Length: 300
Ligand SMILES: [Fe+2]
Image (tube, rainbow, N blue to C red):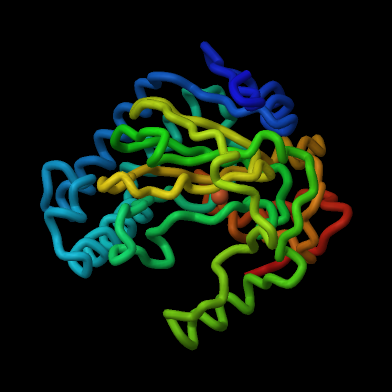
């Protein structure tokens, strides 16, 4: 335990039930020095270096103009999202942690840039506010996976709020609509409509526990955990990778985090696709007659 955070370091692969029981009770799991994670890091570094044209892309803000940085980073993000190599290596990472990949649905394999300077920030490249992912997805069986691509520090990483695990926090999940967000975005790419629900009265960032892990490590935590980006003012960009998964077995066995404060009306199961077949989790849930009890299911 560190600062109230239930931090665990599984030393070998773990079955889905044990992982779910740990994560959905608030534990943060750190899988250290996975061979497949080193390969994934190498692959992500190569893409990033190539697109940014820099040996050390973390210095992009001092070596490129901000418009150029944003453009090149956007291209790197797209390449990662569409890369078969990245998908193959992410699957290998999940396998090494013990995940039954045959039951796994995911959203995207993401490369994230968190700039240090205001001028480089965009909707997708910024300090993320305090939130629970489940306020947007309403999928309480969601597991978040997060890993640094280049080394991070306590002032340039992700932060968790363990004291607010299972503690209701006022938020905008009831009013927020993914459909409205997409409509606003289609009409105006610079819309102010928020990308995700957020805290109405956020805790102080100083209450967040920064997670400092090394490239080659990956952490897993419940999408219901309150978290944020530690505001990056370090002078160096943070470059990390992440994905979100849902195991159909967790849904079948009703393994999930408790809903303490999410008032969203629909579960966004269609955000998740099977890691091998590409089938939508919304389709799978219908086909398998998974009962999501309290919520309607949104379709694309
Ligand atoms: Fe998040």
